Image (spheres, rainbow over the protein chains, first blue to last red):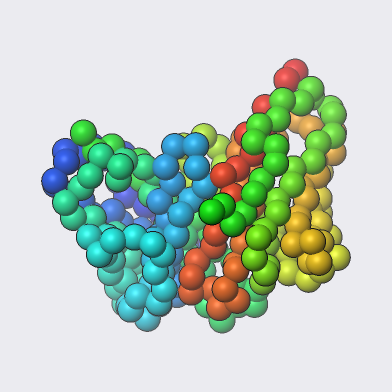
Length: 114
Length: 113
């Protein structure tokens, strides 16, 4: 059974640029959630994708967008990067028909915005 | 305002000693999750509690849920260096799962040899 994988592991961008982060779900999972974790904080929910559509969203602006593909992998896109976007971005996959639903996390992508 | 409070924020414990980490929610809990995180890495799922009074154990780690108080505690018995890391509690506070999990800020655990 393959776990959740994310790429790249590290990324450095400058303010105003755009970035795409990628996530592959654990096998058998159909839902992907994205979180942002700033230094010293707990993860904050960005959004969730199920059946290739956004299924729920946290308090993040529209410049944070995503995609889910037929194989359940996902992308997180961030436009017009700001310094405060520097964080660890975590992807979690789950199977929405499981009860209870448990999210399994990938290793994260460390984004630094200069 | 913070919806999930963890205490303590950090903990230094001598190897072999027991310890407890607490998590309190300001909203109704539909599920309480405990994760462990090594610095700068992903979260490792430990256990999930759903029903009041529920208690689960995994190796030397035990978690309990007090539904009435909307609190959970994580207890480690005979701590080892491998227990060091950041412990995060996460809550499903919407009941549907589509709003993601709300996390506390974490408890940093250091084990002294």
